[in-house]
Image 1 (cartoon, rainbow, N blue to C red):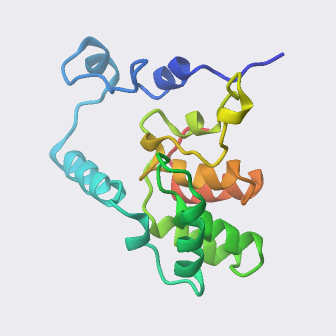
Image 2: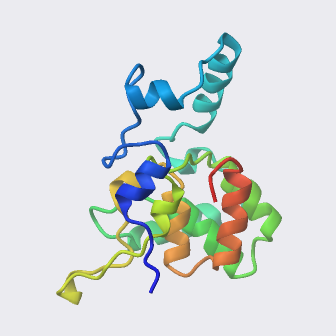
Length: 181
């Protein structure tokens, strides 16, 4: 039986250590794998980082979609205490699933959220979370805090059944075209 790669393997595949930390500049792994940056490449990288930096609140960056704000507030009440906030992404996915938001508008709205990849890579978000020994302690609506402000918010909509895998993959390809598949 094929098992999904472990977190350490995913982190290594994305050029990070087992804790998700990128190699330090000047370290042997950074020096052997990272190309020398030119001034223009550095400026481009800085502009890209600024454009994809996590936002304090995803709701501040998404375009207006009819009924979105109300649904977002309703869904936020169902997110467990201690969870990261993913109400905006869940509301967009719910509107799409209910037929109130066509795919092209969903894609534009999700891209407008500017959610960067998770620090361990977006493949990490697709590793199923094992249920604890006591199922009473498991709440599928609980999102890890380190997913907030990343593509993990959209992954939660998938895990809760608001996006099918094909739609999730299509959105991911549109939002993160450079992610390794």
